[in-house]
Length: 221
Image (tube, rainbow, N blue to C red; front, side):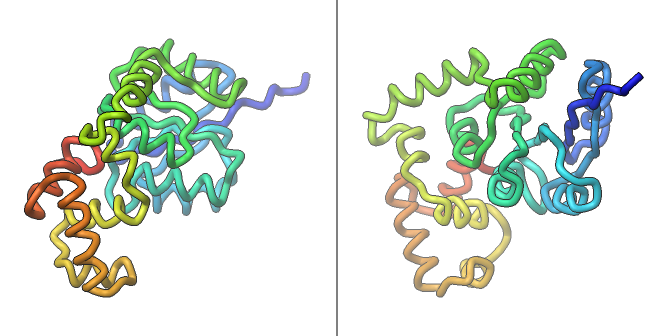
């Protein structure tokens, strides 16, 4: 009798116990299997080169070295047929919009029950997307806020990828000169990014930039 090919799910999360538990849940669904695991985006890239493409990636957003957003962008560019479902503790509009902009096909909270995870996997595999009531509600709310130029959602949506990259680096211990080197830009250009973002976010200091990033799930405290 010919064995049925299972749907391959990669798990990317830096919390080992959670990842192992998630692997068990995925395997329990029968038609799905935990294909491989990774601690972060860089580890995921090594694993996909070794094991090949999964069908779906269940991926945490906040991870060291290479986070879920940057990993989703990499997958979108190098493996466009692989579907990403974001896995997060955050339910704010900015986190959701950020992941969908990066190419995610679904978004599910870590405290969801197994049946919702099964629904998300089924929907993404068969229809190509999964929009839960939470996500739908948040996106509708964010759309309604777009007309308010001062809302967090409107401000976040107006930021480009380079501004987001700078904002994330500004939340580290790197100096502005080191950030310039990391982004292959001049210190003067970095000063321009800083001043423009401070004006856009209505903050006056680097601490203000960090507080905005934490509040909107761009980085964790």
